[in-house]
Each structure stands twice: as structure tokens, then as C-alpha cells.
Image (cartoon, rainbow, N blue to C red; front, side, top):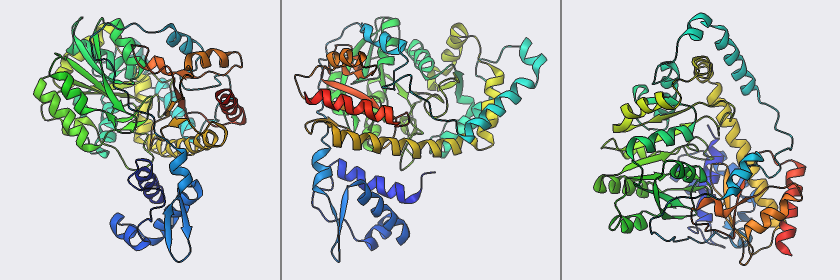
Length: 467
């Protein structure tokens, strides 16, 4: 679990970023912060020191702490985009396949050295090796059940219940990753030609699925900080018959947005009113730098929320294990899994279940969240020091990516091709809309260690943007 002082620091930082605390405004007293957050004095002081070190506040002797002018002015949030809501088929740019071929989906220098494995990952490998040695005769001659290994489903259920999300092991089905879970969800509740609503900007993997399944799409405006615009969706629903909506309420890529609780409740209520499936991509639900985050499933009273996730973003991309809780479509999802992959590896599931049971998964996530937070701060510092001051960007409180708005007429596709000559790969904004919108946007990731080469690459990008 993230340390208390960091939770408090992030809470105050978020208020500053959202403009709830203005430049030059005085913070509440240490005593007031202690009372309002139920923490000790040392915790408050450590949080204030952290904020001061990051430049969000400044201390004035015998007066108090004040929000700094510089941070507020330097971090400007990208504009909210309201897309064309006419229906259309999906056709993705070839750049998507190019980026994936270069193994650069979240890394500006794909061939740069990787972070040395943690002791937790070493423990994971031991659990996997042990699992492969056990029950060899049975596992080599029997397929796994459609739902997947119960021991693993119980551990996943426990993780959700610790986030106050009521998902039982019996409601889960193991998949070959989150993308596979999203595909099964769409196949279970939609037919070719049906209309699916997605956030704009949205995860390009969702667009890829919609293209392959021959589904029509309508893009719904998403605020860079607060996620899917429920009011905009409500207006679209009056004219469009939507069969499903894909949403990422927790630290969505590419923006890193986090939906407020009231918006989540309103979204579920809209799904109930207009009778459509809510497909929740919860891939970043465990990557939170402060408080534990909830799920749309927490407000699901009609069993119409389908939630999909995996271990790829928090543990290892090499372990193709995910899951889906399909609500009223669960049985159909399990049948579809049989046709799409038949069964998952029982040995891999058993090793992962043991790793989670022993506490290694929890420890690794806690460590990873601290590392990602530090890498985010380094990325933001480089942007502030070496990129033009008219750049707008998000500073998320979790996830692995932030959203950058470049001043027009800069074209992120032209920048993409120019940087390839320098062996630097950025993710242009047009990938996050089926209409090739966001031509002056970029997604940047802080998933990888900010090595000197990656920092140098970011400085190169800054120089090119300044010319």
C-alpha cells in the first residue's frame, strides 16, 4: 500500500492540478489537515515536504504553505475534444501496426536497457517453475476448464474485494489477456453492425477489435482529467441505439483520466435506462498512486457491467493471463472462450495463483506504483525544463501514460516520422480515434525507467518542437 504521506501529497496535488486550489492560495493548516484526513502530524509534514520538493507549494515562515505560481502555470491541461458523433465503420491507420512491430507501444526507445527484475519477479519465476514440475501427468493430458483455475480466480476475487468491488470467484473467467477479455465481451453482447460507444480519445486496441468484429462506432467526448463525458453520452443516446459502451474509468490511456464517483454512478444509470452493456477496461485499476480506486461494477445492480483486466501492466506482459467478469453475459463468454482459445495453461495459472497467495503480487504492485510515480515526476520535470512552455499535458495520479497537446500547426505524424530517423518512437494522437483526430497530440508513457538515453530522447523531442 502507498505510504500515507504520499496519499495525502497526491490528494493535494490533484486539487492543484484540477484548479480546486489556485495559484497563490494558502493551504489549510497542519492541524486542519490532520483532522480532515485523520493522520498524524508527521504524516502531514512529510506530505508537505514532498509537495514542496516537487514544486507544487512553497513555505512562508510563520505564515503557512501556499500553492506556487510556477507549477500552476507550467502544467496546462489539454482541451476537451467533442468528436463527430455520426456512425461509421472502423478503419485503423497502418501506423498502429508499425508501432507494434517496433515493440514501441509504451517506449520511446524500444531497444534501451530494461529495468533489472525485482526480487518479487524472481519469486514469481520460482512459483512458475514449481508449478510446471507439479502434476505433470494430469496437466499434460487434460485441458483446463472454461472458467479457468479456481485457485487463481479466488486470488483475483480477493484483490477486487480489497478494492470494495464485489466480484466472486465463480463470476470470473480466465482469458489470454485483457484484450482477449474485451473481445469476448463484445462478441457476447453485440452482433455485426451494432453500435458501440467509445471514449474519445480511446484505446486503439478497442478500435482494432471493433474493426475486426465489424461493429459500428460512435465516439463520446472524454475530458483529459475526468474521463468519459456522461452528459455528452446522454445526448447521443437520445438519437442513437447503442448496444454497448467501452469505458476505462481508472487512468485511461492515453489521457490518464480518472472518472469521479458521481460520473461512474451516472454512467451505470444510463446503461440501465437505455439497456446497453457497459464494458469496463480495468487494466490500470491497481496502478493508483494514492487512494484505492473503485469500479463501475461497484454500482452495478442489474448485472450489466462486464469488467476485463490482466496482469500485463502491473506484473509482466509475457504472462498472457487476464480475466473477465461478464455479468449477465458470463455463460456466453465462457462458451466463446472455448471457440477462441479452448483453454489456458493450468501451470501458468497455478504459478501465478501461488505467487498471489504468498503476497508477492501485492508487494510487487506496491513497489511498481512507487517506481511509476517517480518516473512520472521525472518525465514531467523534463517536459517543464526542456519542452516549449506552450505545451499542454496531463499529470495522472496512476496508470502509465499522459496526454500531450502540441500547439498547432505541429503534426504529430510528421514528428513521428522525423523521430524515427533518430531511433526515437512516439505514439501519435491519430491512433486514438477512428476519424484520425488529434493530429497535434501525443501519448507519452512513464512505464519504463527514465534512463539517461530516454531522458536524452525526450530532450531531442523538445528541441524539435521548439524549432
